[in-house]
Image (cartoon, helix red, strand yellow):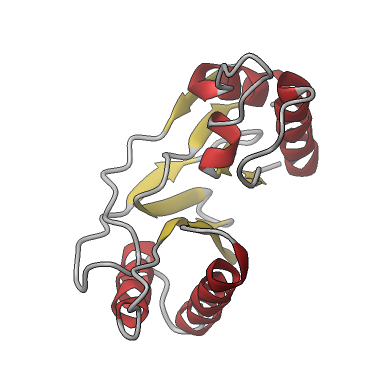
Length: 191
């Protein structure tokens, strides 16, 4: 009855960034075996990532625990954009999460968790900054307002179709502009 998810975005590009993210994912997998509090998970990951990090790389992240039986999701963030709460009734807003510092730079920190009660048809949509910071050929950003509209426009679909719809809208918006960052969307939806 429990699903644990995480979405992260590493600083930098290339092989060093890929290796740092691989280390982060391995830590997440190890911590998720015994920990069910997303804030505590992020804290443990941060402490480990701070060791042997001479390059000063970091990861922003959102971590969530979905309790299917209780219909709740508990979220904590680490320097990451707030996930969206898409209500079945037709509203969409960023979740007010206190947030903590990025992972990997400063040992110790507080990662407060927020619990939200979900109703049938509600969805949580998390994304990397490559979504809101996607640019069109004129240099205009996709932005939070377009992200909210896109998530709401696809809210009646499945988690997969909400994700695909948001990504498609980002690509349509960007048109021929080169993609400068990853575009990643993670959606949880209760039936």
